[in-house]
Length: 303
Image (cartoon, rainbow, N blue to C red; front, side):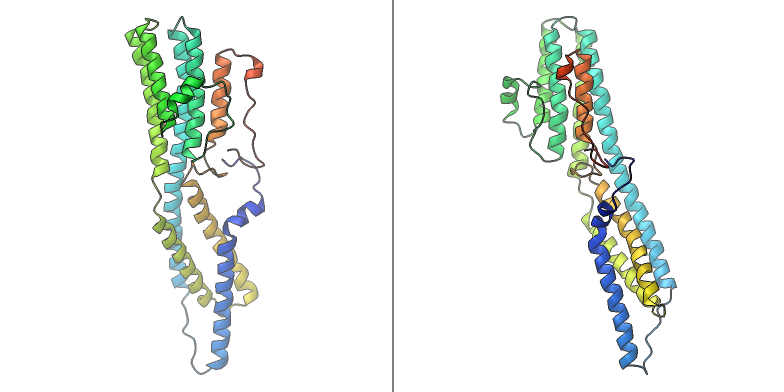
């Protein structure tokens, strides 16, 4: 997630450098065409392009970009709300266990550690990466072997949650109503995971981006012809400035529409998971050495 800091100019320009290069080439080609047309066909005037045509297209592009930005931001914000719910439910889960289970503190610690691991496994799973750089004490060897054969490891960890809650109910450490309350929290974890997977597996229509790109280029070509009488020293910077604004908005929408792609614009799942780990370990009153530091931030973003 981008932080409230000044973005490096290279980070911005690298996203649109190819498009800006194409715009510059198009503008130069149009200038060359109009120059040689007037040079070799002086008796056949070049048809004039009314400025109203690119103006109308620019308005249409603005509406399309506004729609795409809105839809992309909705996906990004929903992802952030999902992980906000995971933070709240993780804290609630441990507090419920500590309040309802008066004995078997080792079981509470085991479940809490597994919940921390669940957050990390969900984070890496959504990003399509192998789980690494998490504390080795979060899962026992038996638990690791239990989830090894599962393709959806976060779901397998929730299954282990349910087994431990069933054992607590069987051993009369909790009654049936307390079991229901705890089970409802596990259900919310499963629901949050499903919502995140739905966003991750639902591809934003690629044709929308391609069509929008095509329309922007058509707009720039028509604008170049509409400004035929304008000096190239003024026209080229103007075209680059206008195209930069359009392409930056389009790229912004493209990057935030997929909030789990391991990019600076993504939902900061690793930082959130580390926060959950710190909170739960502190609730368990673990030693200071066992509590990790906050997840490090980059120059202008946190992952």
